[in-house]
Image (tube, rainbow, N blue to C red; front, side, top):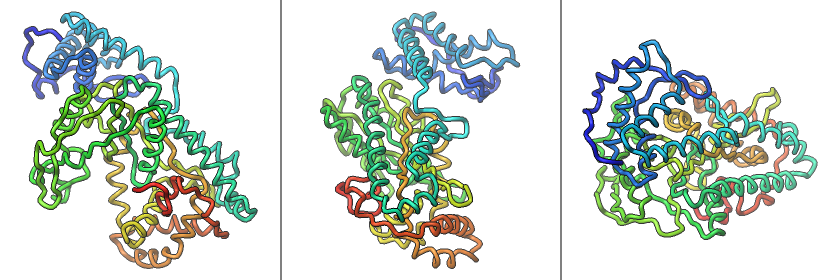
Length: 461
């Protein structure tokens, strides 16, 4: 972008007095006006043509806001499309022609993506209904949509057939996800894998990496834990405790600077964080992306917009995985996704960390609180939503865990501080007891996602 004189940036108190407080999204929803979205969109377009001046992007966004003040009355609610038209006008009017072209191309590409309406369909309540329908339809077609049908499959000696079909479907989905990345391999430099606890991120990422390896591409991870701020700089929760779960506990500014440099082929000097002392050492470790490497971020906060704001949309692929279980119990109620993931965590914690499953149940509400705050609100930012559940796994969870539930229920039933744990444990207990026949898990392949939790995997976690 060219150099020229700029007016002073709007101050916060001035922004709060702007006539425009709401905007209309493409789906008709009315949401709060967000100046930061204008800044980000201008900056990303500038980055596409070699720019790197975020301050200038902020100044141009204020020109857009000034133009909005001239055009709209205080009662007006402009659409996103109208604001984007004004952004183009400001870019061209201030002689940023290359940035304006990149911005126009970006808008056109996303228009075509919306028209394709692929698997990424997420509504306001963050439920991917189209993906759920596909999962449920598959279960119906394969006789595993209810606990009763799965029990019958086991009794009839057809459990190995169900496992084989489910594994084939899972690996076909892996191939589709990898293909989405390969279609844009010339542009994608960063893959973000996000999803709640025990959704299957680790195994699924390994398998996608195997597919990319066949095309001479590979993932290389960057450890975001090293970007935690010094402990005294950490935000605190409502109880005054240091909050490691919030994205603001990370040095987002430094993360963005380093990501931006890595995308440009530069070598960065990463910090190293010492959890014992709560201190980090800056410039401690050199790191760079080699040819045919794609940077991987596997993080609770991967979809948080500020985490990767410095990277243009076209250079990143945001992958979200959830255990989208679509199995009904005898009352016609669907198994809850978070309950299925808790069962997975109970098994894995018991053999991998030597945790008593009771401890996992008692702690689960903390896990859910973090997920609701830092993962669920950003599902609609993902490019691809992946089902990490397997329709045959519930009877295996009973095989490994049912023996613990009597003591778990007894422990928590009269504990006023563990009401959530009791309700959750009772709900899971009721669905597991509907399986009467114990299956043999010898038919579960060594490379199965299920092995991440029950053990016996060929992968090293």
